[in-house]
Image (tube, rainbow, N blue to C red; front, top):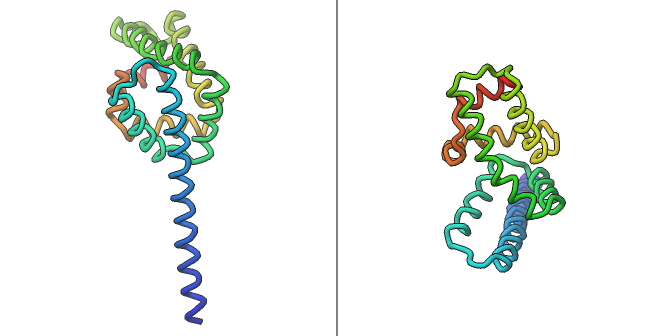
Length: 165
């Protein structure tokens, strides 16, 4: 019947709206958390805000809602101080790996093996050892070249680390 078809269309429309509302609410929650974080910081630059918002919308493209919730939970568990440490460690680790790569160090070399092990530990911490989460993160790096650039991660570096794994 005609009414049945119309009902179906409305139902689909409703489902989509609910999904959008949920996404917006989740963004609200994350922005609230951000504001809270900035009030504890001395001086929040507008840039930080904009970057954070950009990052969120980007994450929404690559991670499912469940994954984002899990990430938020893990953030809380690990605590800000620890997250800050890891944020500082990544660039250092990437720089060390690049140095070994440019030096032509064999990926099997114990020095490189130690760096690769740490790399995997940091990834495992972020993903909680969930391969789907790791895949989403990899897709993010592939799909958003500017993120990879910010972190000085290019495909040759990835390839080199992969060999070390």
